[in-house]
Image 1 (tube, rainbow, N blue to C red):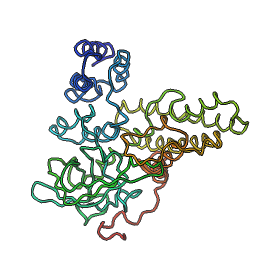
Image 2 (cartoon, rainbow, N blue to C red):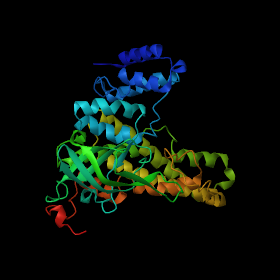
Image 3 (cartoon, one colour):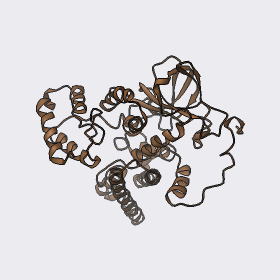
Image 4 (cartoon, rainbow, N blue to C red):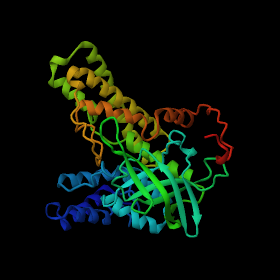
Length: 393
């Protein structure tokens, strides 16, 4: 069993062989992956050492102390938080060897082709079709709200391969090359003025069967792995005390005493406590991950993340008064990442509106928490045993 002392030794060996000050950033990241220090809980040869997940902090602290570069996780969050654990669980050995290293180093960006114009909250109703043609699948359809599609080389994709069975059973999970013919990415301009989201049109896109993850028709089960990890990645990201949005409004409160009122003070105190409770709950959730894959508890974290962000950003705008109505830049951009704390209060207020939609709507997550965490009776569903082709649309 690899322990903390062994990981420190391996990390020092990496730093000696590849001094951060004199090593190209990408070369260092590749060497770190090959040394098994990328994600230590992954298997040997795939960026890890089969060590406990909790020991990753040991490696990260040693590297940070020496000024080693990281892999810019905010830019490649979909790959790290969603694609990688799904590939690890369902991918073939060849798929793991080909895809995981450039995913972790950030050489290849990933996006997620799940939601559709007619299948957002009810994702299992998706209509993008994949039809078998020899050793390939021919895919046609439209996806929407696709973050980073304009930057991505690869996409995780679910498509309907059998319309004659109920909607959850006729789905298959693929890896799609975003550079292939027939893949068209169009920007979706948001309320912030930017277009970090996109819509993606798939026209006769040929995907080799070798890029399928899991069995044919078993895509819904594979997708649950992705979605559970997505909710943890969004709602359970480790942050320090007063990290994130609560830190921005707390700093303004301390620096601008002229803005204070008793009512605002009481509301800020309440949100500060809630943010701290959420942070500590995230610590506990990540500790639970050491014992296995994330479960439905991540839905509660993501649900609370969205609510808190919207309430905190709303209070911040109110605290700033007329200043809170200002907005820094409406220029149409296609950014590489979402920067909540690096922009002004107006951006945080507008962008946080998307938190209750992306990664699963808050309404759907409430159902997940109710049914799968609290064990409450499921809502009546009349379409569970109806073939997808016979559903009203």
